[in-house]
Image (cartoon, rainbow, N blue to C red; front, side, top):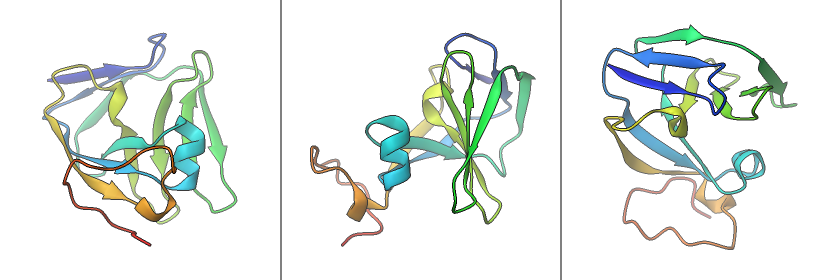
Length: 126
């Protein structure tokens, strides 16, 4: 059983199996939302069960993307793509997560203040 929560504990969940692949997104939205890049786990096929959901606030971008965060402590919770898939912020997951970094997306939009040097696959190159 994998568990996770926000900083204040108002939002908590359980996963019935390991988190799986973690993707780092370097798009402009994720950089602004996180201050760096977002690391997330796709959860459409993961048996995710919310134990608590409190103070959930949603921001809907003009693109239709939805970003949820805890309105109490500010912790990023999940991202909903306009096409229907959802990803959970990997930082919510308590260790051990069972996840592993699998690659990077939207790398052409990454900040100029860091390099990606881990040798993992990169998509969206300029």
